[in-house]
Length: 269
Ligand SMILES: O=c1ccn([C@@H]2O[C@H](COP(=O)(O)O)[C@@H](O)[C@H]2O)c(=O)[nH]1
Image (cartoon, rainbow, N blue to C red):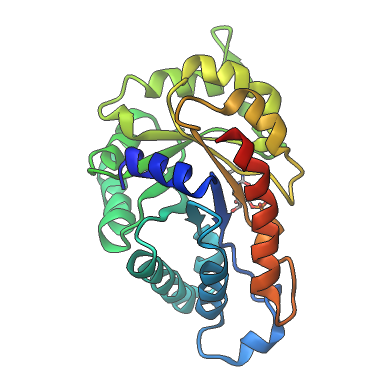
């Protein structure tokens, strides 16, 4: 998907919500556990109930890899279902990959060519040659971890090298890489006070913002400095939406929780 299509969808739906599909079999309604593929059935119900309220879905691959081949098959069925039934939805594989160049190329093929995701999250730690293979794919997006939502972000990301924080080096240096127009960045909602500085370095880029909901980040605080001329934000909530209920009404309750966030977003669009 192109960035222009994503922006048009945001304006059409009056939403920049991304719903995280982080499926834990211990958290889904028990009645689903007896069907053949509980993860896919759960995802399908959540997607059908919420697709009009969001512009993106983000399965975190860890939640599928944890269930082995069955989990990977559920992930594959989920992305195929999304691409077939809701082609205007932006799909993000939250896989946090990145390795030496030829290995990164294989990761990119797996997620962009085989699974046909629109975007993948990538760790910047191994540098330019580990990220550029992802950027070689047309109409695909690479979402680089810049300033993450967890407490451990302060271990390295905010430490200074040559008087500049590491996350700022990530933002600035990556701008010089080939096809850097395909880059987006992860910035945690729990780090709202950093958005002003971040927007000075990447004013036009999209930011994927996890941390609203279960992690306590504030949508309003993020929007204060995070928005740009194209909205430029994808606000993610996973547990806060998909586990709104453990009963048979789970999809309906997820839609209600998604609607609350979408409603908060409307005035910004
Ligand atoms: O900095 C980061 C990067 C990724 N994540 C991921 O986003 C979701 C958040 O889930 P919630 O249930 O809404 O807390 C999850 O997949 C994380 O691995 C992040 O939280 N922070």
